[in-house]
Amino acid sequence: MTKRKQHVSGDNSVFDQISVDLIVNIMSKLPVKSIAQCRCVSKLWSSIIRRPNYNMLFPAKSPAAPRFLFIVANGLYGPNFFISSSPQPQYPDKHSSLEATLHISSIATDYCQICPPVNGLVCRYMYGKDFIYVVVSNPITGENVTTPKVTTKGYPSKEKIYFGYDPVEEQFKVLFMTWLPSSGSHEYQVLTLGTRNLSWRRIQCSTLHYPHEDDGICINGILYYQAIIGQKRSIVCFDVWSEKFSFVNIDQYLATKILEPLILIIYKGGKLGAINCHIRSNFFVLWVLENAEEHKWSKTFYKMPERPSRIDSVFSAGMIGTGEVVLYRKYAQNFFDILYYNLEKNIITSVSLRVPGLDYVEYNGVHTFPNFVGDVKLM
Image (cartoon, rainbow, N blue to C red; front, side, top):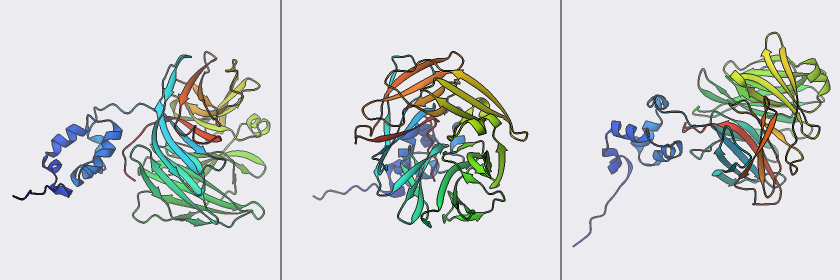
């Protein structure tokens, strides 16, 4: 008597005998992480999730709650990195503690820098000996897309990369700039994700500008970043859809008194905000762009309350939906804290976290981003 071998493969699997309506009903009850894993069940299940209108199949399903996203770069040059996320409590108390869930861990031989996440995707650019390339990751699905390499000219040339999303065409784009400060020569290139053959395209900008050392921020299809034009500070507005540049003058006080790059944030209602935080001097300044065409800013000064004694310096991660500013220690070893700064009540609340990767080596750089919402979109 011989045993009959059972085969489960491709579209002949038992899963493909389930009706499409039932499959959709099953998926509607699953969390985002499980939906991403369902792509591996069969070709049919994968095709359903790949549908352009997939997110419209469940209009009654509540969106995922915003989370904190953490990217830990180990070592001085960050060859090892870990991407994780944790719940983002709205009204934490002083005894709150969180534990982050690891999504991606990897080892790279090239030095990398991180761009803020956009619509559920994370972008980092990697430096080789004489080239740069970009890796875009979806922490929820574990999917990665690597762009073609761009040859660099080496010192004294400089490079900067920004990551944005076009809500009109629903496309992610990478903006790559190179320039020679001595000669003033500039080159601007754009790459659109989701195309069959990824390639860099040259675009034009009529205004010569030198990007500052900030990471930029994308709000409603506009990528904002700081730059120097002549001798003045300015905000560059790059329309991700049209790929056109425009510029906003910075408030005069902002331009003359603040030397280091500001932290750009999304303020209430989707406005562009800028933060300057001096925790050692206990003062905090918030600028909000009220009218881009008229270059009109509002500014508010705050006298900060005392911070926890073990925290001597912080960076701003942005503002959450409740209007509280999130501050954090960028370099950590054995512990990691997030500070909630309530501007109206002038109260600072500390939340302790366990973040994967902090105990890997002695020196860690922790990039913290609030308001992260995972997505199962395929790149």
